[in-house]
Length: 50
Image (cartoon, rainbow, N blue to C red; front, side, top):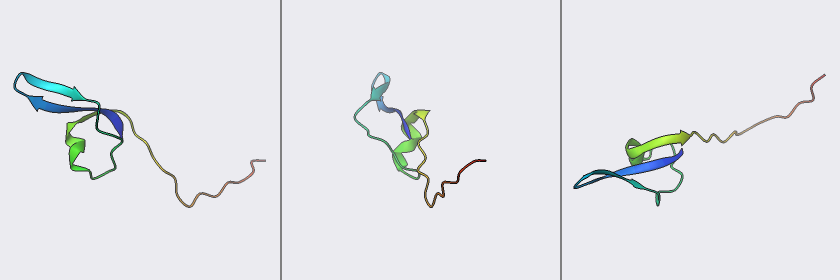
């Protein structure tokens, strides 16, 4: 997932752009406001269309 992670500060919340792309299940996902969901396709078969 791509987006901006936010970390708590004394004054509220601040954006943290140092966190890279996160995988599903990563505990840091709770802090991310997502802008893009990235999916990887596995076992794909390409077929010709008529």
